[in-house]
Every structure is written in C-alpha cells, then in structure tokens.
Amino acid sequence: MQSKRRSIRRAPPRRATPAADRALVVRDDHGSNRAEVVAGSISGLSNGVWNWEDIEDYTVRAVQDTLTRRRTPTADITQPRMDVAVPAIEAMRYSPLKQQIAGLIATSMDRTRAADVHPSFIEMLKQLTEDEVAIIAALPAHGLVLPMLHINYVIERNRIVTAHRNVVAKVLAAVCSQKSSLPQYIDNLMRMNIVETPRDLAIDDDRRYRDLLDQDFVKRIVRAGSKSRKPEVERSLLGLTHYGDTFRRACLD
Image (tube, rainbow, N blue to C red; front, side):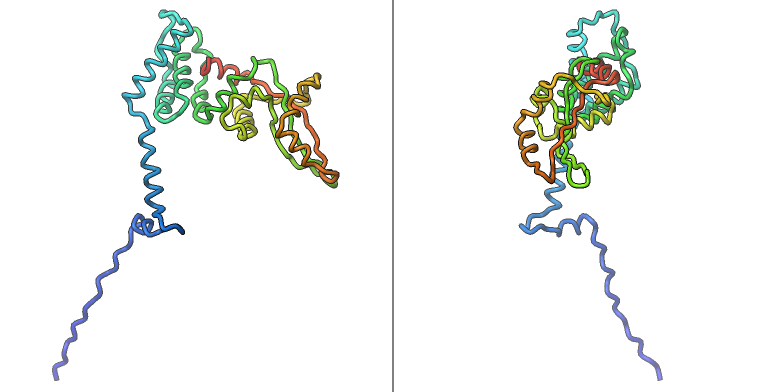
C-alpha cells in the first residue's frame, strides 16, 4: 500500500521587533509617545552645535578683540599652542563658555603670557558652569580671602549632621543665576583646585561672619534647631589657589 504524504505548512518565522519599534509602543499614563518626545529632544541638540565656519568666524573675531583689549603688540602675537588650541576649538562647538575659551587661545598666542597657559585649563572650562566662572571672576586677588562658614546640627551622643555647607558672602551669591546651587559650585571649584579653604584659619573680625549669619536662609536654618539638635557654626575661609589665579588670568582677564 502506498502511503500518502502529508504536506505540512510551516508558519512564517516571526519577525524580531526592532528596539526602535518596541520603544514606540511604550506610552506613559497620559498616552503620549515617550520615544517621540525623547527623540525630538535629542535631535534638537544638533541646532546648538556649531560647524567649522561658525567656530572659525567667532574665534578669529573674539581672539582679535581680546588681544586688542589687552593692547597686545602685533610683534608679540604668535601661533597658538596646538595642545591648547585644538581641544579648545573642539570645545567651542558646544560650550557656552566660548568667550573664555577664546580668551585662553588669545593668551596662548601672546609671547609674553603664553607661559601662563596650562593644557589642563581647557578641561577646566569644559567642567565649569557660567555661574562658576562668575564666582571665579568675583573672588579677590590671590592671597586674599573671603569668610565662609558651615552650619551643623549637633545631636545626641555628639553626632554631627551638616545642615548647610559653604555659606558665602552675598557678593558671590549676587553673580549666580542659580543661588541654591552655590554649595555645589564651591565644592566643584575646590575639586578642581581653583579655590581652597586654608585649614585651621579664620578671620578675626567677627563682623565678617555676622554678615553671613544675617542672611535670611541662614536664620531659618539656625531657628530650625532645638535642644536635641543644636546648631553649630563652623568658621572657614575661601580664596583662589595659585593654580586658580593663573587660570583666571589666562581665561577670564
């Protein structure tokens, strides 16, 4: 007897869903397409990135203006250092600190000031906000200091909890658009060795610290203390390091 062959129809293989397709079906509680929102936000970054023509035009004008303002003689103008200019021009594509970057390039082109330029300065500019640059500009000359203090709560068993770090003078807060970020700004400037707090030193004039304690937000922190959580003021100082002073002269002057 001849057996009959049965034809078997195989189901077509399932097409793997691409990651982009899977992302498109993810919706939030309001039914909006999160992937489209993310894609639109990221694609908009290209509008803020300069091309070479933009960079060249701005850099030439800004460097020329800086050298003119500094009254740099034409005879002292030389080619910029490659280890400074190349990463600086690359950072110019996206950094909001274009004026300071151009200032650094101009310093490297001045024979009388080029020795002040360190290759790390461009990396510092890439890690600074506009507020932090304003703080650096507002600080007194190297060797002079401003009062700074920290407010701690001393609780039972002599445990200490920091209530607010890096309380600084109003003159520094006045130059910042995000004043609530001042403690973080100061920490970042210390991390980069642009500013320092000399240990075991303080200003003898109590009035300088009373001015800091007289700020409204500081009064609120102090009033929030209690018998079980006593506020304690730790006095400190804030000033430019030698490195920070050289950085300021090379990039901000």
